[in-house]
Image (cartoon, rainbow, N blue to C red; front, side, top):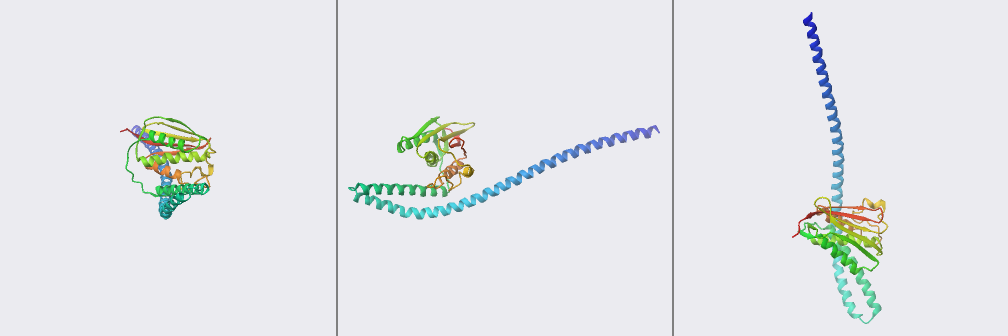
Length: 275
């Protein structure tokens, strides 16, 4: 009888231990199940985002090809028109009124030519040659350009850390700065202040901030401001910021916009050693 009782108590202890182990295992399995459910939800969301990104890129590629074909068709007669205008300029050299008209026509042709260049730039498959580029110098160069070409009502306030280098394509990076500054000038309707600051950001990156005193970006287009052909201006093509985004991304960088008081664009690019 004593032996049976001991055995019974031993069995109960073993059963109790087995039950606890089973409960603990069940808890672990439940936690793993919940974790897997969360991972599946995240993977599905990432997959949907990737699919949307692929479709977007396909649409943009098709759009780029179509735009490039149209741009080439426009550019061909543009050259002839510019030549004819130059010839006419000589013929009417003694007629101020005619000279003024031709000057306005020439300016319009130049704007159209710039638009065509932007379209072709956007459509280009950009496998760019790269080398260390003094980004600080490029920013100062473009500010000087606009100070010389714009009226005194456009004021630039700058704080540029020098020298900061980026491994990139100089012409493409120059276009980034040109487009982002031109966008700010257009936002203030060529009257106001543009703040330009550049410094070494956190980690190995260069940070460029361009802020204007314009009306800011309407909320309804804020999320799509870097899409091609999105613009707040009736006369704009909506390609300037799309090209900026494209080039910055191709250089391994990022661009974001804040629009609380005016608009502020923040560009971050990987920093490299100078030459």
